[in-house]
Image (cartoon, rainbow, N blue to C red; front, side):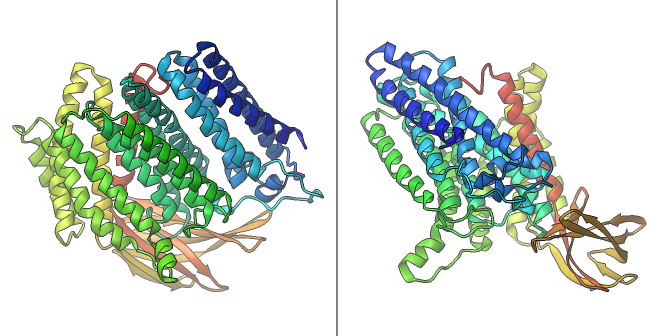
Length: 592
Protein backbone atom coordinates (compact mmCIF):
# COMPACT_ATOMS: atom_id res chain seq x y z
CA UNK A 1 0.00 0.00 0.00
CA UNK A 2 1.48 3.36 -1.07
CA UNK A 3 1.08 6.83 0.44
CA UNK A 4 -1.80 7.80 -1.85
CA UNK A 5 -3.81 4.71 -0.93
CA UNK A 6 -3.15 5.25 2.80
CA UNK A 7 -4.44 8.81 2.50
CA UNK A 8 -7.63 7.58 0.84
CA UNK A 9 -8.27 5.02 3.60
CA UNK A 10 -7.72 7.69 6.25
CA UNK A 11 -10.06 9.95 4.32
CA UNK A 12 -12.76 7.26 4.40
CA UNK A 13 -12.35 6.73 8.15
CA UNK A 14 -12.54 10.49 8.79
CA UNK A 15 -15.64 10.79 6.63
CA UNK A 16 -17.39 7.91 8.43
CA UNK A 17 -16.47 9.47 11.78
CA UNK A 18 -17.84 12.83 10.59
CA UNK A 19 -21.10 11.12 9.61
CA UNK A 20 -21.49 9.47 13.01
CA UNK A 21 -20.53 12.69 14.82
CA UNK A 22 -23.02 14.64 12.73
CA UNK A 23 -25.87 12.31 13.67
CA UNK A 24 -24.95 12.48 17.36
CA UNK A 25 -24.49 16.25 17.06
CA UNK A 26 -28.23 16.71 16.59
CA UNK A 27 -28.54 16.15 20.35
CA UNK A 28 -25.15 17.25 21.68
CA UNK A 29 -23.32 20.32 20.39
CA UNK A 30 -19.87 18.96 21.27
CA UNK A 31 -20.37 16.07 18.83
CA UNK A 32 -21.24 18.57 16.10
CA UNK A 33 -17.89 20.29 16.75
CA UNK A 34 -16.13 16.94 16.45
CA UNK A 35 -17.90 16.40 13.13
CA UNK A 36 -16.63 19.74 11.86
CA UNK A 37 -13.04 18.84 12.82
CA UNK A 38 -13.47 15.54 11.01
CA UNK A 39 -14.55 17.48 7.91
CA UNK A 40 -11.27 19.41 8.14
CA UNK A 41 -9.45 16.07 8.14
CA UNK A 42 -11.37 14.86 5.07
CA UNK A 43 -10.43 18.01 3.16
CA UNK A 44 -6.77 17.86 4.24
CA UNK A 45 -6.39 14.20 3.35
CA UNK A 46 -8.17 14.45 -0.02
CA UNK A 47 -6.10 17.56 -0.85
CA UNK A 48 -2.89 15.68 -0.10
CA UNK A 49 -4.00 12.75 -2.25
CA UNK A 50 -4.89 15.05 -5.15
CA UNK A 51 -1.53 16.86 -4.89
CA UNK A 52 0.33 13.53 -4.98
CA UNK A 53 -1.57 12.48 -8.11
CA UNK A 54 -0.94 15.86 -9.79
CA UNK A 55 2.79 15.66 -8.98
CA UNK A 56 2.87 12.14 -10.43
CA UNK A 57 1.52 13.53 -13.70
CA UNK A 58 3.89 16.50 -13.75
CA UNK A 59 6.83 14.23 -12.86
CA UNK A 60 5.94 11.58 -15.47
CA UNK A 61 5.70 8.85 -12.84
CA UNK A 62 4.45 6.03 -15.05
CA UNK A 63 4.65 3.51 -12.23
CA UNK A 64 1.06 4.58 -11.52
CA UNK A 65 -1.33 2.83 -13.90
CA UNK A 66 -3.60 5.88 -14.11
CA UNK A 67 -0.72 8.20 -15.07
CA UNK A 68 0.59 5.76 -17.68
CA UNK A 69 -2.85 5.52 -19.31
CA UNK A 70 -3.47 9.28 -19.54
CA UNK A 71 -0.11 11.03 -19.96
CA UNK A 72 3.24 10.87 -21.74
CA UNK A 73 6.55 12.75 -21.76
CA UNK A 74 5.61 15.02 -24.67
CA UNK A 75 2.31 16.18 -23.21
CA UNK A 76 2.37 19.93 -22.36
CA UNK A 77 2.32 20.57 -18.61
CA UNK A 78 -1.10 22.24 -18.66
CA UNK A 79 -2.65 19.11 -20.18
CA UNK A 80 -0.78 16.94 -17.68
CA UNK A 81 -2.68 18.82 -14.99
CA UNK A 82 -6.01 18.45 -16.77
CA UNK A 83 -5.26 14.75 -17.26
CA UNK A 84 -5.67 14.41 -13.49
CA UNK A 85 -9.46 14.38 -14.05
CA UNK A 86 -9.43 13.05 -17.63
CA UNK A 87 -10.14 9.47 -16.56
CA UNK A 88 -12.62 7.88 -14.22
CA UNK A 89 -10.28 7.35 -11.25
CA UNK A 90 -8.89 10.88 -11.19
CA UNK A 91 -12.25 12.52 -11.85
CA UNK A 92 -13.74 10.77 -8.81
CA UNK A 93 -10.84 11.94 -6.64
CA UNK A 94 -11.29 15.48 -7.95
CA UNK A 95 -15.03 15.22 -7.18
CA UNK A 96 -14.27 14.10 -3.62
CA UNK A 97 -11.82 16.96 -3.12
CA UNK A 98 -14.22 19.65 -4.40
CA UNK A 99 -17.04 18.18 -2.31
CA UNK A 100 -14.88 18.24 0.82
CA UNK A 101 -13.85 21.85 0.07
CA UNK A 102 -17.46 22.98 -0.38
CA UNK A 103 -18.61 21.10 2.72
CA UNK A 104 -15.83 22.54 4.87
CA UNK A 105 -16.41 26.08 3.61
CA UNK A 106 -20.11 25.84 4.37
CA UNK A 107 -19.59 24.36 7.84
CA UNK A 108 -16.93 26.89 8.84
CA UNK A 109 -19.05 29.85 7.75
CA UNK A 110 -22.26 28.61 9.36
CA UNK A 111 -22.44 27.51 12.99
CA UNK A 112 -26.11 27.03 13.78
CA UNK A 113 -28.68 24.27 14.12
CA UNK A 114 -29.43 24.20 10.41
CA UNK A 115 -25.79 23.68 9.42
CA UNK A 116 -25.42 21.06 12.19
CA UNK A 117 -28.34 19.21 10.60
CA UNK A 118 -26.70 19.40 7.17
CA UNK A 119 -23.40 17.97 8.48
CA UNK A 120 -24.38 14.25 8.49
CA UNK A 121 -25.86 14.50 4.99
CA UNK A 122 -22.70 16.11 3.59
CA UNK A 123 -20.52 13.58 5.41
CA UNK A 124 -22.53 10.61 4.12
CA UNK A 125 -22.19 11.85 0.53
CA UNK A 126 -18.44 12.26 1.13
CA UNK A 127 -18.29 8.71 2.49
CA UNK A 128 -19.94 7.41 -0.68
CA UNK A 129 -17.37 9.14 -2.89
CA UNK A 130 -14.51 7.96 -0.68
CA UNK A 131 -15.68 4.39 -1.28
CA UNK A 132 -15.85 4.99 -5.03
CA UNK A 133 -12.35 6.47 -5.15
CA UNK A 134 -10.97 3.52 -3.19
CA UNK A 135 -12.82 1.11 -5.48
CA UNK A 136 -11.41 2.72 -8.64
CA UNK A 137 -7.94 3.34 -7.05
CA UNK A 138 -6.07 6.11 -8.93
CA UNK A 139 -2.87 5.09 -7.07
CA UNK A 140 -2.72 1.52 -8.36
CA UNK A 141 0.88 0.60 -9.24
CA UNK A 142 1.96 -1.29 -12.35
CA UNK A 143 4.15 -4.40 -12.00
CA UNK A 144 6.67 -2.68 -14.29
CA UNK A 145 7.40 0.93 -15.29
CA UNK A 146 6.79 1.58 -19.02
CA UNK A 147 9.24 3.72 -20.98
CA UNK A 148 6.48 6.19 -21.83
CA UNK A 149 2.80 6.64 -21.17
CA UNK A 150 -0.06 6.13 -23.60
CA UNK A 151 -0.82 9.86 -23.65
CA UNK A 152 -3.97 11.89 -23.37
CA UNK A 153 -6.83 11.46 -25.81
CA UNK A 154 -5.95 14.01 -28.55
CA UNK A 155 -9.51 15.35 -28.54
CA UNK A 156 -8.95 16.51 -24.95
CA UNK A 157 -5.86 18.55 -25.85
CA UNK A 158 -7.92 21.69 -26.29
CA UNK A 159 -8.08 24.94 -24.29
CA UNK A 160 -11.83 24.41 -24.00
CA UNK A 161 -11.19 21.12 -22.21
CA UNK A 162 -9.10 22.96 -19.63
CA UNK A 163 -12.29 24.76 -18.56
CA UNK A 164 -15.10 22.36 -19.42
CA UNK A 165 -14.74 19.42 -16.99
CA UNK A 166 -13.83 21.40 -13.84
CA UNK A 167 -16.64 23.87 -14.51
CA UNK A 168 -19.13 21.02 -14.82
CA UNK A 169 -17.82 19.44 -11.63
CA UNK A 170 -18.08 22.70 -9.69
CA UNK A 171 -21.66 23.02 -10.89
CA UNK A 172 -22.63 19.42 -10.16
CA UNK A 173 -20.95 19.19 -6.76
CA UNK A 174 -22.19 22.57 -5.56
CA UNK A 175 -25.77 21.26 -5.57
CA UNK A 176 -24.85 18.88 -2.72
CA UNK A 177 -24.88 21.68 -0.14
CA UNK A 178 -28.48 22.80 -0.94
CA UNK A 179 -29.51 19.15 -0.89
CA UNK A 180 -28.13 18.77 2.63
CA UNK A 181 -29.65 22.11 3.69
CA UNK A 182 -33.09 21.18 2.36
CA UNK A 183 -33.14 17.84 4.18
CA UNK A 184 -32.00 19.47 7.42
CA UNK A 185 -34.45 22.35 7.05
CA UNK A 186 -37.50 20.26 6.21
CA UNK A 187 -36.71 17.73 8.94
CA UNK A 188 -36.32 20.47 11.59
CA UNK A 189 -38.95 22.89 10.28
CA UNK A 190 -36.35 25.65 9.77
CA UNK A 191 -37.49 27.57 6.67
CA UNK A 192 -34.18 29.46 6.35
CA UNK A 193 -32.90 26.58 4.21
CA UNK A 194 -34.51 27.97 1.06
CA UNK A 195 -32.74 31.35 1.07
CA UNK A 196 -29.36 29.76 1.77
CA UNK A 197 -29.98 27.15 -0.90
CA UNK A 198 -30.72 29.80 -3.52
CA UNK A 199 -27.34 31.40 -2.90
CA UNK A 200 -25.54 28.10 -3.40
CA UNK A 201 -27.78 27.28 -6.35
CA UNK A 202 -26.79 30.51 -8.09
CA UNK A 203 -23.11 29.67 -7.61
CA UNK A 204 -23.53 26.10 -8.90
CA UNK A 205 -25.85 27.13 -11.74
CA UNK A 206 -23.27 29.67 -12.92
CA UNK A 207 -20.48 27.12 -13.17
CA UNK A 208 -22.76 24.51 -14.69
CA UNK A 209 -23.68 27.07 -17.35
CA UNK A 210 -19.98 27.76 -17.96
CA UNK A 211 -19.35 24.03 -18.28
CA UNK A 212 -22.18 23.55 -20.77
CA UNK A 213 -21.11 26.53 -22.90
CA UNK A 214 -17.43 25.52 -23.01
CA UNK A 215 -18.50 21.98 -23.91
CA UNK A 216 -20.62 23.32 -26.75
CA UNK A 217 -17.71 25.41 -28.02
CA UNK A 218 -15.37 22.41 -27.82
CA UNK A 219 -17.82 20.31 -29.82
CA UNK A 220 -18.12 23.10 -32.40
CA UNK A 221 -14.43 23.75 -33.03
CA UNK A 222 -12.82 20.36 -32.30
CA UNK A 223 -15.05 17.49 -33.42
CA UNK A 224 -15.39 18.69 -37.02
CA UNK A 225 -19.10 18.01 -37.53
CA UNK A 226 -20.23 21.64 -37.67
CA UNK A 227 -22.58 21.55 -34.68
CA UNK A 228 -22.54 22.45 -31.02
CA UNK A 229 -25.32 20.26 -29.56
CA UNK A 230 -26.20 16.75 -30.72
CA UNK A 231 -28.60 15.67 -27.96
CA UNK A 232 -25.98 13.17 -26.92
CA UNK A 233 -26.87 11.39 -23.62
CA UNK A 234 -23.95 12.95 -21.75
CA UNK A 235 -24.85 16.40 -23.09
CA UNK A 236 -28.40 15.77 -21.91
CA UNK A 237 -27.04 14.75 -18.51
CA UNK A 238 -25.74 18.29 -17.97
CA UNK A 239 -28.85 19.94 -19.40
CA UNK A 240 -31.33 18.20 -17.08
CA UNK A 241 -30.02 19.56 -13.74
CA UNK A 242 -29.53 22.95 -15.41
CA UNK A 243 -33.25 23.05 -16.25
CA UNK A 244 -34.41 22.06 -12.77
CA UNK A 245 -31.89 24.40 -11.13
CA UNK A 246 -33.21 27.24 -13.28
CA UNK A 247 -36.73 26.35 -12.16
CA UNK A 248 -35.62 26.46 -8.51
CA UNK A 249 -33.99 29.88 -8.91
CA UNK A 250 -37.37 31.15 -10.15
CA UNK A 251 -39.38 29.27 -7.52
CA UNK A 252 -41.79 31.48 -5.50
CA UNK A 253 -40.56 31.76 -1.86
CA UNK A 254 -43.75 30.41 -0.30
CA UNK A 255 -43.92 27.24 -2.38
CA UNK A 256 -41.71 25.28 -0.01
CA UNK A 257 -42.72 21.79 -1.13
CA UNK A 258 -42.17 22.67 -4.79
CA UNK A 259 -38.77 24.15 -3.95
CA UNK A 260 -37.80 21.08 -1.92
CA UNK A 261 -38.77 18.84 -4.82
CA UNK A 262 -36.61 20.87 -7.23
CA UNK A 263 -33.58 20.79 -4.92
CA UNK A 264 -33.78 17.02 -4.48
CA UNK A 265 -34.38 16.35 -8.19
CA UNK A 266 -31.48 18.60 -9.20
CA UNK A 267 -29.08 16.79 -6.87
CA UNK A 268 -30.27 13.36 -8.00
CA UNK A 269 -29.90 14.38 -11.65
CA UNK A 270 -26.24 15.28 -11.08
CA UNK A 271 -25.68 11.78 -9.72
CA UNK A 272 -27.74 10.31 -12.57
CA UNK A 273 -25.55 12.14 -15.08
CA UNK A 274 -22.48 10.63 -13.44
CA UNK A 275 -24.16 7.22 -13.67
CA UNK A 276 -24.74 7.73 -17.41
CA UNK A 277 -21.07 8.53 -18.09
CA UNK A 278 -19.72 5.56 -16.15
CA UNK A 279 -22.16 2.66 -16.49
CA UNK A 280 -22.36 1.93 -20.21
CA UNK A 281 -26.14 2.38 -19.84
CA UNK A 282 -26.06 4.64 -22.91
CA UNK A 283 -23.61 5.10 -25.76
CA UNK A 284 -21.82 8.43 -25.96
CA UNK A 285 -18.62 9.89 -27.38
CA UNK A 286 -18.25 11.77 -24.08
CA UNK A 287 -18.63 8.79 -21.72
CA UNK A 288 -15.92 6.97 -19.77
CA UNK A 289 -15.26 3.30 -20.42
CA UNK A 290 -17.95 0.95 -19.13
CA UNK A 291 -17.49 0.26 -15.43
CA UNK A 292 -19.43 -1.51 -12.66
CA UNK A 293 -19.03 1.70 -10.66
CA UNK A 294 -21.97 3.14 -12.57
CA UNK A 295 -24.39 0.93 -10.71
CA UNK A 296 -23.09 2.17 -7.36
CA UNK A 297 -24.41 5.55 -8.46
CA UNK A 298 -27.78 4.03 -9.34
CA UNK A 299 -28.04 2.44 -5.89
CA UNK A 300 -27.09 5.76 -4.30
CA UNK A 301 -29.81 7.56 -6.29
CA UNK A 302 -32.44 5.10 -5.09
CA UNK A 303 -31.29 5.30 -1.47
CA UNK A 304 -30.82 9.08 -1.26
CA UNK A 305 -33.91 9.85 -3.33
CA UNK A 306 -36.06 7.53 -1.24
CA UNK A 307 -34.75 9.03 2.00
CA UNK A 308 -35.36 12.56 0.74
CA UNK A 309 -38.89 11.64 -0.33
CA UNK A 310 -39.63 10.19 3.11
CA UNK A 311 -38.32 13.33 4.85
CA UNK A 312 -40.24 15.56 2.46
CA UNK A 313 -43.54 13.76 3.09
CA UNK A 314 -43.06 13.88 6.85
CA UNK A 315 -42.20 17.58 6.88
CA UNK A 316 -44.78 18.69 4.37
CA UNK A 317 -46.86 21.66 5.50
CA UNK A 318 -49.50 23.88 3.97
CA UNK A 319 -48.56 25.20 0.54
CA UNK A 320 -49.42 28.79 -0.31
CA UNK A 321 -50.34 29.68 -3.85
CA UNK A 322 -47.96 32.36 -5.05
CA UNK A 323 -46.09 33.52 -8.16
CA UNK A 324 -48.39 32.14 -10.84
CA UNK A 325 -46.27 33.01 -13.87
CA UNK A 326 -42.97 32.06 -12.22
CA UNK A 327 -44.47 28.77 -11.05
CA UNK A 328 -45.80 28.11 -14.55
CA UNK A 329 -42.35 28.84 -16.00
CA UNK A 330 -40.89 26.31 -13.59
CA UNK A 331 -43.41 23.71 -14.71
CA UNK A 332 -42.43 24.27 -18.35
CA UNK A 333 -38.74 23.89 -17.48
CA UNK A 334 -39.50 20.66 -15.61
CA UNK A 335 -41.50 19.41 -18.61
CA UNK A 336 -38.44 20.06 -20.80
CA UNK A 337 -36.32 18.15 -18.29
CA UNK A 338 -38.76 15.22 -18.32
CA UNK A 339 -38.71 15.07 -22.13
CA UNK A 340 -34.90 15.10 -22.07
CA UNK A 341 -34.84 12.35 -19.46
CA UNK A 342 -37.26 10.09 -21.36
CA UNK A 343 -35.46 10.67 -24.65
CA UNK A 344 -32.11 9.88 -23.03
CA UNK A 345 -33.11 6.58 -21.43
CA UNK A 346 -35.36 5.44 -24.30
CA UNK A 347 -32.63 3.47 -26.19
CA UNK A 348 -31.75 1.43 -23.09
CA UNK A 349 -35.39 0.89 -22.13
CA UNK A 350 -36.32 -0.17 -25.68
CA UNK A 351 -33.48 -2.68 -25.69
CA UNK A 352 -34.60 -4.03 -22.32
CA UNK A 353 -38.22 -4.45 -23.47
CA UNK A 354 -37.79 -5.52 -27.10
CA UNK A 355 -34.20 -6.69 -27.37
CA UNK A 356 -33.51 -4.00 -29.95
CA UNK A 357 -31.89 -0.64 -29.15
CA UNK A 358 -33.81 2.22 -30.76
CA UNK A 359 -32.54 5.78 -30.46
CA UNK A 360 -34.49 9.02 -30.63
CA UNK A 361 -32.69 11.51 -32.85
CA UNK A 362 -32.40 15.29 -32.54
CA UNK A 363 -35.71 15.64 -34.37
CA UNK A 364 -37.58 14.21 -31.37
CA UNK A 365 -36.07 16.73 -28.96
CA UNK A 366 -36.35 19.68 -31.34
CA UNK A 367 -40.02 18.95 -32.05
CA UNK A 368 -40.90 19.23 -28.36
CA UNK A 369 -38.39 21.89 -27.28
CA UNK A 370 -39.47 24.32 -30.01
CA UNK A 371 -43.07 24.96 -28.81
CA UNK A 372 -42.24 24.69 -25.10
CA UNK A 373 -39.33 27.08 -25.56
CA UNK A 374 -41.68 29.54 -27.23
CA UNK A 375 -44.00 29.36 -24.24
CA UNK A 376 -41.08 30.33 -21.99
CA UNK A 377 -40.41 33.32 -24.27
CA UNK A 378 -44.04 34.35 -23.98
CA UNK A 379 -44.08 34.03 -20.18
CA UNK A 380 -40.80 35.95 -20.10
CA UNK A 381 -42.41 38.88 -21.84
CA UNK A 382 -45.76 39.12 -20.11
CA UNK A 383 -44.34 38.98 -16.56
CA UNK A 384 -42.36 42.21 -17.13
CA UNK A 385 -43.56 45.75 -16.78
CA UNK A 386 -42.98 47.75 -19.92
CA UNK A 387 -45.99 47.16 -22.10
CA UNK A 388 -46.46 50.92 -22.65
CA UNK A 389 -43.03 51.31 -24.26
CA UNK A 390 -42.55 50.84 -28.03
CA UNK A 391 -39.16 49.15 -27.44
CA UNK A 392 -40.47 45.54 -27.18
CA UNK A 393 -42.43 45.88 -30.42
CA UNK A 394 -39.44 47.49 -32.13
CA UNK A 395 -37.10 44.67 -31.12
CA UNK A 396 -39.71 42.12 -32.23
CA UNK A 397 -39.80 43.76 -35.66
CA UNK A 398 -35.98 43.77 -35.87
CA UNK A 399 -35.81 40.11 -34.83
CA UNK A 400 -38.41 39.19 -37.44
CA UNK A 401 -36.39 41.00 -40.11
CA UNK A 402 -33.24 39.09 -39.11
CA UNK A 403 -34.82 35.64 -39.25
CA UNK A 404 -36.48 36.40 -42.58
CA UNK A 405 -33.16 37.56 -43.97
CA UNK A 406 -31.60 34.33 -42.73
CA UNK A 407 -34.19 32.38 -44.72
CA UNK A 408 -36.72 31.48 -42.03
CA UNK A 409 -39.36 28.99 -43.09
CA UNK A 410 -42.16 27.63 -40.92
CA UNK A 411 -43.87 29.05 -37.84
CA UNK A 412 -41.32 28.40 -35.08
CA UNK A 413 -38.50 30.74 -36.17
CA UNK A 414 -40.99 33.53 -36.88
CA UNK A 415 -42.78 33.06 -33.55
CA UNK A 416 -39.41 32.86 -31.79
CA UNK A 417 -38.46 36.21 -33.31
CA UNK A 418 -41.74 37.84 -32.26
CA UNK A 419 -41.96 36.39 -28.74
CA UNK A 420 -38.22 36.57 -28.11
CA UNK A 421 -37.99 40.16 -29.32
CA UNK A 422 -40.95 41.14 -27.16
CA UNK A 423 -39.41 39.47 -24.09
CA UNK A 424 -36.00 41.00 -24.79
CA UNK A 425 -37.47 44.49 -25.05
CA UNK A 426 -39.28 44.20 -21.72
CA UNK A 427 -36.23 42.79 -19.93
CA UNK A 428 -34.05 45.56 -21.40
CA UNK A 429 -36.39 48.22 -20.02
CA UNK A 430 -36.25 46.74 -16.56
CA UNK A 431 -32.46 46.23 -16.71
CA UNK A 432 -31.95 49.89 -17.61
CA UNK A 433 -34.06 50.94 -14.62
CA UNK A 434 -31.93 48.84 -12.28
CA UNK A 435 -28.73 50.15 -13.87
CA UNK A 436 -29.81 53.77 -13.39
CA UNK A 437 -30.73 53.10 -9.75
CA UNK A 438 -27.39 51.38 -9.06
CA UNK A 439 -28.99 48.02 -8.24
CA UNK A 440 -26.29 45.94 -9.92
CA UNK A 441 -27.45 42.67 -8.37
CA UNK A 442 -30.83 42.87 -10.11
CA UNK A 443 -29.17 44.30 -13.20
CA UNK A 444 -27.00 41.17 -13.30
CA UNK A 445 -30.12 39.02 -13.01
CA UNK A 446 -31.73 40.77 -15.97
CA UNK A 447 -28.47 40.54 -17.90
CA UNK A 448 -28.78 36.76 -17.51
CA UNK A 449 -32.31 36.94 -18.95
CA UNK A 450 -31.16 39.14 -21.84
CA UNK A 451 -28.37 36.68 -22.64
CA UNK A 452 -30.78 33.75 -22.43
CA UNK A 453 -33.15 35.29 -24.97
CA UNK A 454 -30.27 36.12 -27.35
CA UNK A 455 -28.84 32.60 -26.94
CA UNK A 456 -32.21 30.97 -27.63
CA UNK A 457 -32.75 33.24 -30.64
CA UNK A 458 -29.39 32.09 -32.02
CA UNK A 459 -30.31 28.45 -31.42
CA UNK A 460 -33.57 28.89 -33.34
CA UNK A 461 -31.71 30.66 -36.17
CA UNK A 462 -29.05 27.95 -36.40
CA UNK A 463 -31.79 25.40 -37.10
CA UNK A 464 -32.89 27.26 -40.23
CA UNK A 465 -31.87 24.78 -42.91
CA UNK A 466 -28.10 25.22 -42.71
CA UNK A 467 -26.20 24.79 -45.97
CA UNK A 468 -23.60 22.01 -45.93
CA UNK A 469 -21.55 20.21 -48.54
CA UNK A 470 -18.47 18.01 -48.97
CA UNK A 471 -16.08 19.09 -51.73
CA UNK A 472 -13.11 17.12 -53.04
CA UNK A 473 -10.47 19.26 -54.80
CA UNK A 474 -6.79 19.29 -55.69
CA UNK A 475 -4.22 22.10 -55.47
CA UNK A 476 -5.07 25.01 -57.78
CA UNK A 477 -8.70 23.96 -58.24
CA UNK A 478 -11.68 26.21 -57.54
CA UNK A 479 -15.16 25.55 -56.19
CA UNK A 480 -18.13 27.57 -54.99
CA UNK A 481 -20.30 27.07 -51.92
CA UNK A 482 -22.82 29.20 -50.02
CA UNK A 483 -21.97 32.41 -51.83
CA UNK A 484 -18.22 31.94 -51.28
CA UNK A 485 -15.56 31.20 -53.93
CA UNK A 486 -12.76 28.87 -52.79
CA UNK A 487 -9.33 28.11 -54.24
CA UNK A 488 -7.10 25.41 -52.77
CA UNK A 489 -3.59 26.86 -52.98
CA UNK A 490 -1.76 23.89 -51.46
CA UNK A 491 -0.76 22.05 -48.31
CA UNK A 492 1.82 22.72 -45.60
CA UNK A 493 3.00 19.85 -43.36
CA UNK A 494 4.19 20.64 -39.83
CA UNK A 495 5.99 17.61 -38.31
CA UNK A 496 5.93 17.34 -34.52
CA UNK A 497 7.14 14.67 -32.14
CA UNK A 498 4.62 11.84 -32.17
CA UNK A 499 2.32 13.56 -34.64
CA UNK A 500 2.13 15.41 -37.94
CA UNK A 501 -0.09 18.39 -38.68
CA UNK A 502 -1.13 18.87 -42.30
CA UNK A 503 -2.73 22.21 -43.11
CA UNK A 504 -4.51 23.26 -46.29
CA UNK A 505 -4.41 26.82 -47.56
CA UNK A 506 -7.78 27.97 -48.89
CA UNK A 507 -8.21 31.38 -50.46
CA UNK A 508 -11.81 32.50 -50.02
CA UNK A 509 -13.73 35.34 -51.67
CA UNK A 510 -17.11 36.73 -50.69
CA UNK A 511 -17.97 39.64 -52.93
CA UNK A 512 -15.11 42.12 -52.59
CA UNK A 513 -13.80 40.60 -49.38
CA UNK A 514 -10.94 38.10 -49.58
CA UNK A 515 -9.41 36.04 -46.76
CA UNK A 516 -7.49 32.82 -46.12
CA UNK A 517 -8.57 29.78 -44.11
CA UNK A 518 -6.22 27.00 -43.01
CA UNK A 519 -8.15 23.89 -41.93
CA UNK A 520 -6.03 20.87 -41.17
CA UNK A 521 -5.75 17.33 -39.91
CA UNK A 522 -3.41 16.06 -37.22
CA UNK A 523 -2.15 12.48 -37.52
CA UNK A 524 -0.83 10.67 -34.43
CA UNK A 525 1.55 7.72 -34.23
CA UNK A 526 -1.12 5.66 -32.50
CA UNK A 527 -3.36 5.98 -35.57
CA UNK A 528 -5.68 8.66 -34.22
CA UNK A 529 -6.69 11.65 -36.31
CA UNK A 530 -8.11 14.98 -35.19
CA UNK A 531 -9.45 17.95 -37.13
CA UNK A 532 -8.21 21.52 -37.02
CA UNK A 533 -11.38 23.40 -37.89
CA UNK A 534 -11.47 26.93 -39.29
CA UNK A 535 -14.47 29.14 -38.55
CA UNK A 536 -15.06 32.52 -40.16
CA UNK A 537 -17.52 34.25 -37.85
CA UNK A 538 -19.88 37.01 -38.91
CA UNK A 539 -22.80 38.81 -37.32
CA UNK A 540 -25.47 36.73 -39.04
CA UNK A 541 -23.64 33.53 -39.98
CA UNK A 542 -20.49 31.44 -39.61
CA UNK A 543 -18.54 29.80 -42.39
CA UNK A 544 -17.36 26.46 -41.03
CA UNK A 545 -14.61 24.50 -42.85
CA UNK A 546 -13.02 21.19 -41.84
CA UNK A 547 -10.61 19.07 -43.88
CA UNK A 548 -11.93 15.53 -43.49
CA UNK A 549 -9.79 13.45 -45.86
CA UNK A 550 -6.52 13.86 -47.72
CA UNK A 551 -4.71 11.88 -50.41
CA UNK A 552 -1.46 12.45 -52.27
CA UNK A 553 -2.96 14.97 -54.69
CA UNK A 554 -6.37 16.01 -53.30
CA UNK A 555 -8.39 16.68 -50.17
CA UNK A 556 -12.01 16.63 -49.08
CA UNK A 557 -13.53 19.53 -47.17
CA UNK A 558 -16.68 19.62 -45.10
CA UNK A 559 -18.26 23.07 -45.48
CA UNK A 560 -21.20 24.49 -43.60
CA UNK A 561 -22.92 27.85 -43.22
CA UNK A 562 -24.30 28.17 -39.69
CA UNK A 563 -26.79 31.05 -39.33
CA UNK A 564 -27.09 32.83 -35.99
CA UNK A 565 -24.03 31.24 -34.34
CA UNK A 566 -22.76 34.61 -33.10
CA UNK A 567 -25.99 35.09 -31.12
CA UNK A 568 -25.39 31.78 -29.33
CA UNK A 569 -21.89 32.69 -28.12
CA UNK A 570 -22.63 36.35 -27.37
CA UNK A 571 -25.81 35.39 -25.52
CA UNK A 572 -23.89 32.81 -23.52
CA UNK A 573 -21.25 35.39 -22.56
CA UNK A 574 -23.98 37.77 -21.36
CA UNK A 575 -25.54 35.00 -19.27
CA UNK A 576 -22.20 34.32 -17.59
CA UNK A 577 -21.45 38.02 -17.09
CA UNK A 578 -24.83 38.58 -15.47
CA UNK A 579 -24.54 35.50 -13.27
CA UNK A 580 -21.07 36.43 -12.01
CA UNK A 581 -22.24 40.01 -11.40
CA UNK A 582 -25.15 38.70 -9.34
CA UNK A 583 -22.75 36.51 -7.36
CA UNK A 584 -20.41 39.40 -6.64
CA UNK A 585 -23.22 41.73 -5.60
CA UNK A 586 -24.70 39.24 -3.12
CA UNK A 587 -22.81 39.34 0.15
CA UNK A 588 -21.12 35.94 0.59
CA UNK A 589 -23.42 34.77 -2.22
CA UNK A 590 -21.54 31.63 -3.02
CA UNK A 591 -20.66 30.30 0.39
CA UNK A 592 -23.38 31.03 2.92
